[in-house]
Length: 269
Image (cartoon, rainbow, N blue to C red; front, side, top):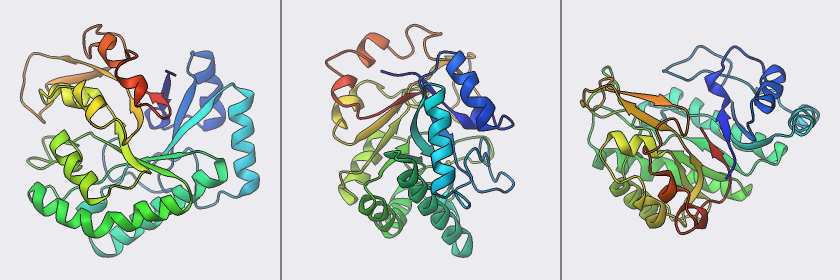
């Protein structure tokens, strides 16, 4: 198990400064943000630590050298749009950029791209799954042809202004089952964050076993309650892994009989 972070947490720090800081702070890996150079269209988005529109072999070599010089690895490239929540030219642009991120992963020899399925928050899960079945197989195939894995994070993206449906379909084990029935490809799995299951009152340990053949990487956070349990309206907070020793149950989460059998790549916070 290796400790890392998603660089989107430090949007104003260039990668050349972020990498040495991460190494000095004890991190092993970085999931590097690769949004297009534009204004953020949502919370925690719009961060560009690698500009995939201009990345070439020389630029990739410089980034690899930066990581190597600081004793770091790249766990994944990160781009988390809401592909199912938009239509027309906007959707086409998001898909095109995601494919550029996949191509950048090839140049950087990074095996995983982390992303969202997205969701139309005004419709039910069944309708979103129908749209997912139309849109996502071609994206996963594009990645497979380049030997890149797609890791879907399970954050519902549910806030007071995205109620009631949230902006990411892939938020629960029952939906994951249906997703993987539609797209059973070996390069398609989860960027698994247990904290999101905890605040939804879903067992965060069982999916590690149930979905172990599809899990690509793990995002580990802990979460603490502020005392108000109202899904989607700010009752919880994120904390660094380990601050709350029982959230999740780390002995079960990281034990040799559970996650270690399923983990293929990096662990990030």
